[in-house]
Image (cartoon, rainbow, N blue to C red; front, side, top):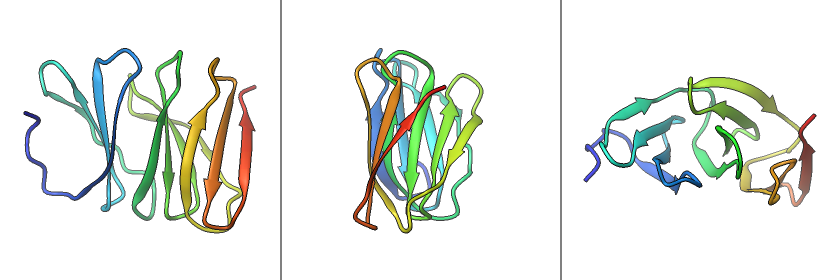
Length: 120
């Protein structure tokens, strides 16, 4: 069992290779654990409001997090660094999904829009 944390985990997901478990919290954090050892790998903060959604890139070490603050942050899960911050929704981001080859990320929001973000 993963260690207990003092935050409310709002979203959770597995990495495509099954090596990691990630949680998004109401307290604005992303928490990444090693799935076999349960060791905490990183706990970065970047959003200004709760993390609503998480999506693993299908072929790389990138994790997308969508927040109630209207932003999407792309994280390098090897380092915990922010790769990019995507803005454009006028309200909370509530859905994220990568296409099968990871060249595009779709996001949906409470503003009634779906946006397509292309990797360059």
